[in-house]
Length: 77
Image (tube, rainbow, N blue to C red; front, side, top):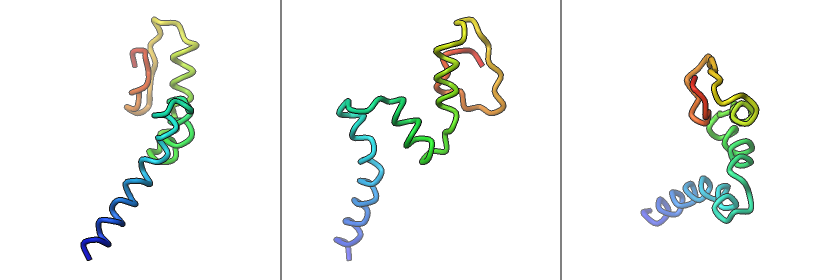
């Protein structure tokens, strides 16, 4: 019974780790990973917009967010 529990637990962990292996190996960028996998798994749909704001807005820009999910913003919000 313990062996079955350990194998199913290991399978669940591998399911979470396997999608990040291309990022670790350098064959996929962090932006691609967050945009494709992270938005589905973590319900983080704003990363492309945050990336656009980081790259296109002036450095002294202030951004108004409706929610507190500005973790990936390099600007004041």
